[in-house]
Image 1: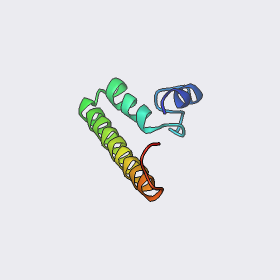
Image 2: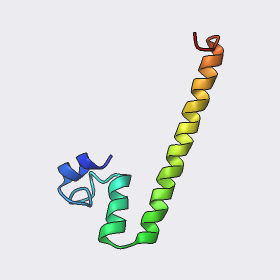
Image 3: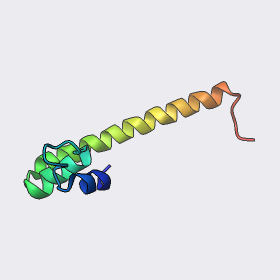
Length: 74
């Protein structure tokens, strides 16, 4: 989530007291405004790994559900 908090917060930090700041906005702020490129890279890799884990869990659940319902495509 990036665009909506940026619009509602009015700044790259997600509002005056960071109330709208998401992980994507934090990445953007660290990389492009604070020039902490190493930290921004670590955030990006962490986000990538979180997405991979969520994708694998989703795939395992879908596979298990397919097997329990008698499985293959018809």
